[in-house]
Image (cartoon, rainbow, N blue to C red):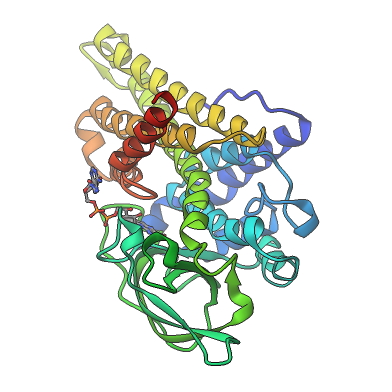
Length: 385
Ligand SMILES: Cc1cc2nc3c(=O)[nH]c(=O)nc-3n(C[C@H](O)[C@H](O)[C@H](O)COP(=O)(O)OP(=O)(O)OC[C@H]3O[C@@H](n4cnc5c(N)ncnc54)[C@H](O)[C@@H]3O)c2cc1C
């Protein structure tokens, strides 16, 4: 059953209707085979880009759709209820454009951001390293300026990069001095840059259509105009981007949980044991009720954070709460969906087991849920001390 939504206006409702139509006609028929084949759905991203769904929360003056976050996130949720890898990809792509939109010069917005917002280009976000995961400020990938200051040479390796080898550009964070968190800068690296080497994709538990691998930067040269923001401003840029990105993951996790709930409800109404549908047992019906409560709570927390963001209010703590609540809800709801389907839930004949595998990573990426608790508690204690 489609989630009940109160959209702010008719245009926003049209976007939801468009998303549902694309999901039903173009995504749903492909998802099972594509996930089984570990196929990167570049053509699906192109389709979403042409439909305007890759640039929803960015300003119209640069080619975006100018939609509030409240609307963008509900589109992500709708996509996730059908194809989680694609929803995560939309969220990652949106993250890659944040630095240019917020910190880029007018010239960079015209030359770099506009083609990205046009929907033809897909981005990747290169922050994590093998030895710098939760502690990103300990990164060692280094960018060194040329003698005349006109370019930078990037050397080092990034890890766990979604869309690696398929993206058209790489939003990359690298160390420009040894001054800890103040010594990191942000660059936009084109996919065809010499020295960009992609490792074999990681063999993951789920999200098989989201190709993830290490990327080695072997003296990759980028021109000076691809530095975003000031030298040394990279970490604040990355963290601000993640505040928005975490909301994308919260919305995707909510959609995944909604998909699992819908499957569980329909199975419970059809499956007969002891002469009646299993849904007629209160023990099982109450499990479904708890799943519905978890999905609705997840949606409410991310929408609250989105509305704060749309109103220009600080959103860091609320975004971390939304990511924590929605991804924990997704883990619980997808696990319970497998239970509702019994043995069938443990087979690949139904997508319940895939939903459960996909939910796990939402508690890990874009800051683990332990790190979300760190962000929330630090902000809370700062306010009350
Ligand atoms: C499928 C996938 C896609 C990804 N895509 C991207 C991407 O596109 N771009 C990108 O840059 N990164 C990406 N990542 C990386 C992801 O963001 C990191 O995996 C994540 O931040 C955790 O880092 P880590 O794996 O090194 O874990 P670690 O930091 O080593 O953490 C291990 C454990 O220790 C806990 N821990 C660590 N520090 C603390 C602390 N201070 N207090 C309490 N507990 C703590 C963690 O919560 C976790 O449980 C992706 C990861 C995956 C799995």
